[in-house]
Length: 468
Image (cartoon, rainbow, N blue to C red; front, side):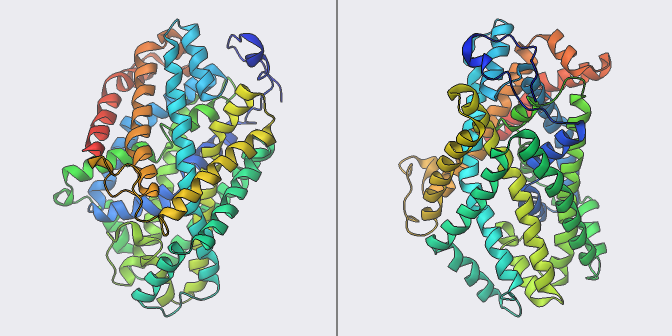
């Protein structure tokens, strides 16, 4: 579909990007943005950090942080994307030109695109674990296993670079096939199938969890706040996860926002996406914790919850192979929709900057990401003693996999989010913001002041805490 943006184009580079896809509807954008936000962070990370930080009180703080930090920055990122009408880097450059700002602001887009690229390189490896576990669960290998043997299954997977490479390749291929088909035929069609499928699978696992006899215990754990269990560290973890779960700071919402037609409310869609993302995280908790409690396990089992603790539970329960398979298919769906969104910002930039067609730009970006992922694979086994930046105390003992995770989660994402808030709240034309958002005066004032004052301070606190 062709359209002309309101952005002023300069030179052949912008002229070559005039033909762009648009989401067909508000629902299409919501599904795509929710698909980006809903990922391993919801199904894997949210339940275990909730377990580690005491349950209900943590959840309550997390919801407040979504409202105070997540939604304002999401609105800002979508706004930048739609106003610029280009890739994140070029949208920021065009807005800076129009508002007579320093051209260095385009580096905010560069930070986001780089973060998304680095994240996908190791995220694809983890997505490959989920693909592998579908076969493991479906074949009945989990049935009747002890904790030691379940741990051995996971350890054997991580120690085998050939198997990890196979599943990493499969996952990246799934991502590239969708992205190469473009906005309507690829991204939109995929999320219109994957997101309803994800919700149905999640509801099926929740329905099973209700039969364990411990569903009420899980509801109480998640929704009855006990503030005596909440620490300062827990509050900062909630704040950090609220920021990261919505795919903020990685240029995705700018890229998706550039395909958003005029006339669709940025505020309403951002709030809807945030609600749906949070809903999936809470449903994941309701799916996982009854199974954990029914098998006498600890809710704060840590990162091993999905690939070690739950497989042990699936191996002990009636119809465990079936529901274990369903769970890991659900995990693949969540990782797939996020993987698609992580590749999109770089592909969009290559199309514009290098004049590549969609297929070639996807191949270049996807293969580069796949290649970097091999380093993460090797760091789990053959290169497990290699710490590239180990001479610095902050990175001591960190493998390539650990380093990429640390650099993105603790430096690039909060830095990108902080700069988005500062750029939008302090430098962009206030009238332009009002025109894009079309909010009432009171609603605009609430968002604007939150973005200018509260959000940057909150993100800065997370940034400093993570580095310390």
